[in-house]
Structures are given as C-alpha cells and as structure tokens.
Image (tube, rainbow, N blue to C red; front, side, top):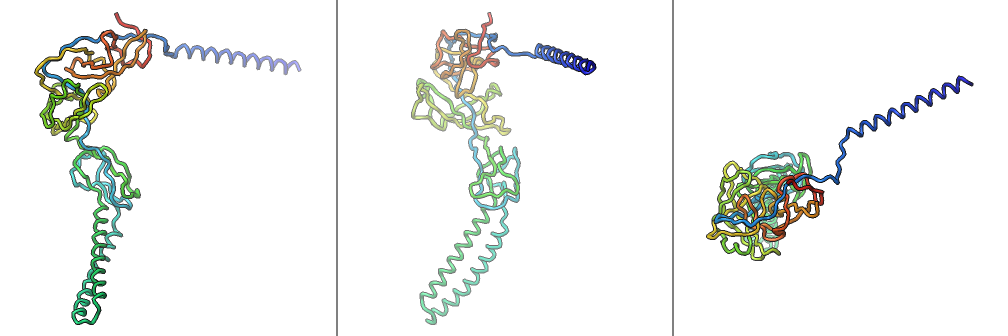
Length: 351
C-alpha cells in the first residue's frame, strides 16, 4: 500500500514539473513573438496643400485601357479538339484560335451534295416531262422547290462547318485561356480572351475651364508614368457632353502604342496640352497620391489619425496635382509613410 502511495506521489510531482515547464516555455515563446500594437502611432511626414502655378504645358491624368478586349466565343457546338494558341501569343485578325470536331458535319455536306445532284437530274427530267405535258405543273414546281430547299440546307451545313473554326476577330494578344481540350462547347461559349493594345484608350477628367481647349480629332501627346518623358502620339476621340458632379468632363483619347507595345493596359498616363495662360490654384504633391488616378485619394491627418480622403484632381505637371475639390489649404496631407497606413490609423508627425 505504501508503495502504491509513493508511486502516486512521484507521478503527481512529475506531472506538476512538466506543467510548470510547459508554461515556462510558452511564456518564453510569447516574449519572442512580436505583437503589433494597433494603438501605437506611425511616424509620417505631412504638409499642407499649397498654391501652385501650372505653366503653359498642362497634363491631365488617366489610366490606359486596351482598345479592344473581348472574350472570343464559339459560333458552333461540339467537342474542342484543337487549341492553336496559348496565353501570351500574338495573333492576327482571322487567325484560327481553336477547332471543334466537324467530322459529322463534313459527312452531312457530302450527303447533301449527293442529294442535290440527284435532285438536279430529277428536275431536268421533270422539266422535259412538263414540256411534253406528261406531268402537271404542280409536280414540276414541287421538284424545283425540293432542289432549292436542298441547296439552302447545304449552305447551312457549310456555315456550320465554318463555325467549327474559331478565328480572331481582331489582332491582339491572348491574355486568358478559358477552355481546355476535350471540352464540350456551345454557341456563345468563351474560348479565349483577346486584348489589343496596338492602340490604347486614355480617358482623362478635364475641368470646365479647360474643356473648350479640346476638339474631337485634335492631336495630343501622352506620357506613361513608367517611361518618364517619352511621348506617344494620339488624338481626341470623344468629348463628354455631360459634366460630372465636380463640373469635370470626361475626354477620351486614342493613343498609338509603339512597335514593341511598351504601354500596357492599366498603366498610369497623362495627356499634355499646350495652354496659352498659366493657372495658379490649390495643389498637392503627387507623392501624396494613393489609389488610382481615376479615384485619387490622400491621407489627411485629423486628431492624430490618418483619414483616407478622396478629392477631385485637375491639371498635373508631374510634381503637383491640382485640387479641384475635396481638400482645403488647412488640411494636413501625408506625403511620406502612407504605405504603412490604413484608414483611421494613429499617426505621429515627423518634425
């Protein structure tokens, strides 16, 4: 009995020591883990919007979009037996992208041709019999209609055969493959996504005071942010007749890409315009910008917190953005450190 009690006591002591050791290891591990304190203020640099003069050459921000981007769909139905392209391939207009199984259609065409040949022979005999008044005019007309119906059916089968080859409706780059070999497709089933960036669309937002400086067909020069001062030729393709709530007008320009297709859809860009007069207005540093040029935003410091604020941008000269609305000269705008911020984050201003 005493031995049993001794063993139980020893077991309890060992378990107790193990528990203490585990808690000790857990505490040591937790001390090594970095726990972010959401209440800790992030150090940022900020400045007030300033009054800036935009010189004769004005720039309006936008984002490049593909001239054409469509899902190329099948006109026919059947099993996909060949896919001649892969993602990233450059294709020309009319190039075959994929093929459907068309063996049955070809057999039907052969049968239709034989049927037409037979009907032509029958129709010739009926014409002679009609001349000899051996048959009625109604019977001869029925034979003629049967021949025409067979010819229409052949044309339908030939169109069905052409539909078994899916071709590119325009030149471009295959940016997405949407089906795999062996798939059963129906009319309207997307096969690939095709994108044309030989010409791009760049839509800009122009303040009311500047909209009359643009004319449809007018030549413009565009820049892609990533390529600095390199210029790309284009022209104005559309001018909106309705302003938005900030009295800005959407103007669409068509920009010619270079032979190497250096500009890609989604890149930031700007359209430059020579102006006869300079413009002095409220502006923010471009390095404060977060978000896209279509929806420009900055972080404004209010009561020690970063507040993500949208504003309407106008003219740009590469260093500053015109503030049309949404910000005031008394706002404190973050110009450095915003990569670490979220809306309503605690911030501390660098001195």
